[in-house]
Amino acid sequence: VDEIRAGIRHLCTLRVTEPELEYLRGLRCIKSDFVDFLGLFQMNEKYISVAPSAAGNGESEVTVRGPWLHTILFEIPVLAIINEIYFRNTVRVPDYALGRRRLEEKIALVTDDPALAELKIADYGTRRRFSRLWHEEVLIECRNRLGVHLAGTSNVLFAMTYGLTPLGTMAHEYLQACQALGPRLRDSQTFAFETWAREYRGDLGIALSDVYGMSAFLRDFDMYFCKLFDGARHDSGDPVAWGERLIAHYEKNRVDPRTKTLVFSDALTFPRVVGLYLRFRDRARTAFGVGTNLTNDLGYTPLQIVIKMVRCNGQPVAKVSDSPEKNMCEDEAYLAYLRQVFEIAAPASSRA
Image 1 (cartoon, rainbow, N blue to C red):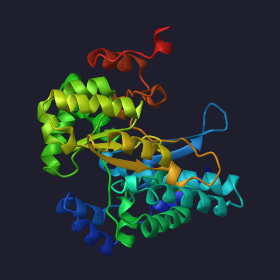
Image 2 (image 1 turned 90 degrees about the vertical axis):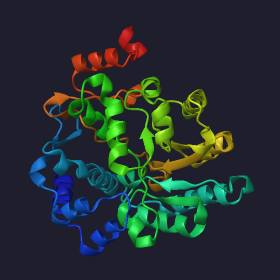
Image 3 (image 1 turned 120 degrees about the vertical axis):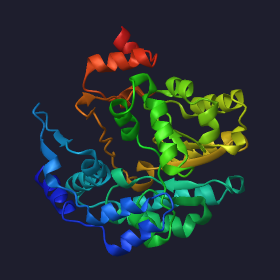
Image 4 (image 1 turned 60 degrees about the horizontal axis):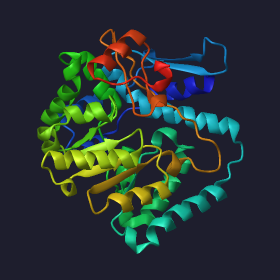
């Protein structure tokens, strides 16, 4: 806990530098007023607390509470800090040689197969990386060896440093917040999509599909949104079933799925990426965000940790996933109400 606190304390001393601000100004999807804000912005330690769990079970509790504008940027760096400190304490002498061999095998799996010529993979691994230095080594090797197969990275600093494309999609937290900030609850998902489209005007056109589950997503993702958005992102449940349902949904709404992008980002490994690519490559555009398996594969069990919003504007918010273990809500009454509103069946274990 003390090491995590020290890492966060250091994080809160950092400022976005002028060269970094100039780089951000060159990104079409980021508005100039937000870059100006980042020039003044500094994370504040008073909005985050780290303490041993009150349950006395050896776990730690991290709570972020404050104005959303000042708290949203904690998520990725804090998770990266926790991961690095955990592995620094549990793996004194990392087996980098094994990590390099595994990385070599992954790269060869893609580059040695002519059938995968159009396959592109992005690095989504900052929050669960083994360490910053290992992440950087992996990314440099991927840039040098994967070549055109490397679509980019969600780490904006590494994108700037190594001339890569910064990539990312809609966050769960955004859709969750719209439950509190939008109109009536039933319209919160469509409100989120409409607001996003008005802000980005065609950029960042990938809709997140798993805050309410795929069935609720498809009910709201009507012909208008099918045509408006470039595609959708899978992050829970069976990826094959998700892809088949989305393609059928596009066809039902008279949209050619070959013009749309299916983004897969849930617990991907390179073999799974290859399998999904070969299944869908001729039927839709595909994109793959690989996280833990890329930046934390040295033979040690990675941490499965996330930070999610649980309250906004004084009211509970929830994520209801097609993978029940990813559900998140602290208020059972609100969760039951949300399930009723969006016609989401409770998991079998809850109904029993």
